Amino acid sequence: MRSEKGAIALEFLFLFPLVIAMLYAAAAYGMLFFGKYEMQSVVDQAASSALRVDRSRLSENDLSSQIVATAKATLEQGWASKSESLTSGTDSRDCEVVDSAGISFLTCVISRNNQEAPMVPQLTFGFLGKFPPMPDAMRAEATMAF
Image (cartoon, rainbow, N blue to C red):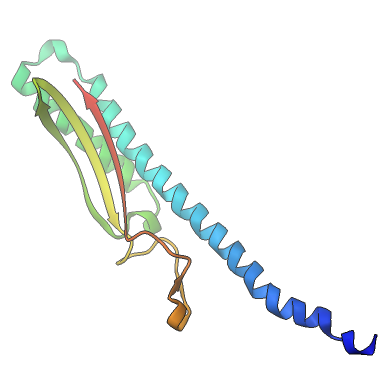
């Protein structure tokens, strides 16, 4: 009976850091997934904005340039409204028209470098490395045919 004194304190000492680490990892991945959702939402809005271009007034050549201009403007406006923690570290954001097998596609892309400007700070544990592990880069893409 006497030899078990302090056993609960030792269990707490060993388990408490693991519980805190799991909570931190859950919060970090939640922020990461929400950031990815926000990126995808912006490129989806940019691609869908091209559907609102009035095609009846434009020639075929002007249509492509007007669609790209509209999508880029929507992309820039949507990206500018996002938080600094998400927008910092952005490598590229662009919309372009790609022709494939006689079909024109509008592709909008946002990519960010998670190494230079991580969305969530990582903890370093010496030889164990960084925790929680995060992707080096994040990318969101939306494509539509017109």
